[in-house]
Image (cartoon, rainbow, N blue to C red; front, side, top):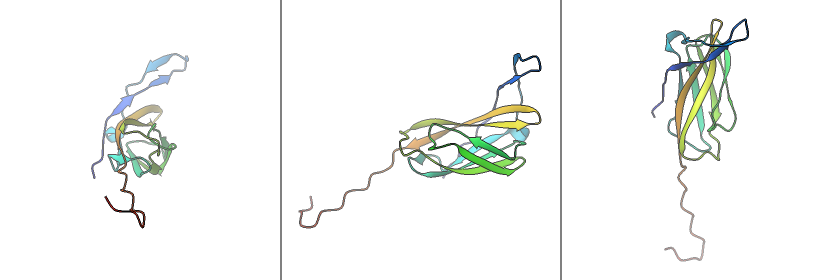
Length: 131
């Protein structure tokens, strides 16, 4: 099964003077999120791995997830398991986490494809002719 990897995107940080300024920081090693399997199906369990953060815990969020995915691990690599919402429609969904590198917070994003779950055929009712 394929996985998706993407780059780190900078976020805004609050300066000591409380003014918003852009921070162009990248997680060590390039930082990425991997979601497997991809594509996924509604109701399916997925693994989320984040690399390049100095955090030891975190949360990955997406409208595709039934609830946020709690991430744990060692500095540099976090992972967790989540579930695709049973109401997720076939589409591409943004998955993101906020990563801390030193004193800088950086958002890492990727896209996850959700495909429609195949509906199994209904079994024939006993006594009913098969078509």
